[in-house]
Amino acid sequence: MSFYDVIQKYDPQQVVAEIEAMTATDVQRALAAEQLDNHDYMALLSPAAEDFLEEMAQKANAITLRRFGRTIQLYAPIYLSNECHNSCRYCGFSVHNPIPRRTLNLDEIEQEARILHDQGFRHILLLTGEAPGKVGNDFIAAAAERIRPFFSSISIEVYPMETDGYKEMVAAGIDGLTIYQETYDPVLYSELHPSGRKRDYRFRLETPERGGAAGLRRIGIGFLLGLGDFRSEAFFAGLHGRYLAHHYWRTLLSVSFPRLRPAEGGFQPLHPVSDRKFVQLMCAMRLLLHDAGLVLSTRENAELRDNLLPLGITQMSAGSCTAPGGYAEDNSASEQFAIDDDRTPAEIAELLRARGYDPVWKDWDEAFLQSSSE
Image (cartoon, rainbow, N blue to C red; front, side, top):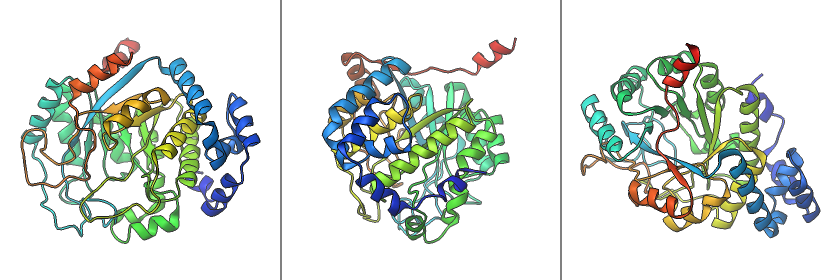
């Protein structure tokens, strides 16, 4: 049994109807609960809960302080390639977009890594499109091995792999996986992915489980805000997170909140998510998943990111570039999407300190495992 079998029991439209039927009484019951059941979580995602955002925010803040203290982990992405054979309608890397394509070589990857290392980063995220034959498992493993001396933790956000593929990544020094389902609605998923290997909804949905089975230390999930109804998508993301936390309890879970940003191709959000709904989603997720990391990227503007800090955020990207080679040079390779917070890592760190938070550049080292085994 996998999460695919769990999600088959639900109809997205019915889930939306149940959420929208929740009342203020349901919301109050959920706020009084120490651990949420599905009914409680639906209530916190409902329109009725919008009148209780202050109470939700206070409880989300208290849970986060209890579980994580006042620390915010900083990380940055390195885009290894923008080659992609998928036709995702919303992505700047789509095979149908006539953009300049580029794949970095190992020397260029090391150059990007050195720049981020010098800025203070010790957590890094490697990203690619999906282009079999051009960017494969061996390439990603070689990139990770090349830059391992610079970072204590390396994660990947690439195409889905089989379990053996993730074991190869672990052997290369990769300890984390981020994989967004994009949308949990299978009908909408099919419409948005008309061709390419990414069209396989089930294979992508079960990817975090294969990563967990391979021994990855950290797994991050999420959905792309703006594609499907945010209430239904948030409900399924919450179920997914709870399933993974239960079945892969040795793996650290995180949830990201990527909101659609302008990208090549001009795709417009099907269901725009307002800042108010964004806050509601984040608070509800924290009240459901007390121990999950909540991740906020530079997709969001500086003012909003600053104001969201007390609501449960534990990880933030900083100084991001979403084009291959973008840290080392101005180049013609296109970005996957436009960022909205262009402050430097140093500026982000200073802002965190001014708000009473401790910016964490490094919170893990493989030596911890070696010490515990001696």
